[in-house]
Image (cartoon, rainbow, N blue to C red; front, side, top):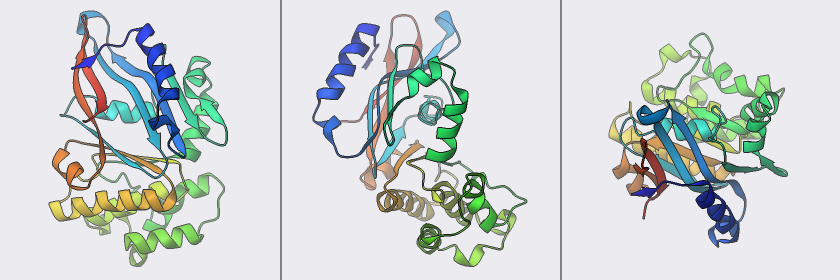
Length: 265
């Protein structure tokens, strides 16, 4: 059972994170303690809690749990889509450390939007491709919005790794489900984000394609120096691929229901 974290617990864990051997791993991207989000108020509320989390560039991390446990909420917290509960410690290591919790407290929406656009890529459960754009245009849309060139060596490597070079002039309706997911991975990585978030990216695929999609995400993360966080209920596949797992457990709180996400032992 995960412990319910009081403000004192959060401060103690904040200090231990900075002193622990794990936090000394090269190229940390995200370090957080006391991260959480609450739905509702009082006895009917549901809280999603992440007491302690460190994510390193180049690693692939799986957030696992049953449907409704809050996996997608963890992605939303990491993706700067929802504000954490007060008292959170949330550092993003860019060129210099960025205090994400302070940006939320200060309502710095512009700074948060710029971080989301430049530093995060998203892979949705069903691909999320824009149906009126070609594969080439879908892959390049984030680059275009950021003012980057349409193609470079990164794009060429992605197209080759994902085996989608022959699909560039097709629209999503002309692609298989597996092809759509590979294009979605390409779009998520095309602008060189530091973090890629994938919500159940293999759930609509047959087992062989599911293994391939998750393996591609893992391998491309290493190659591109990005961290990948995958929300999934497929714990067996996660373990078969040797991914680090952060698992949902019941929140041990006296006055509310919820889930607590901690590294699986």
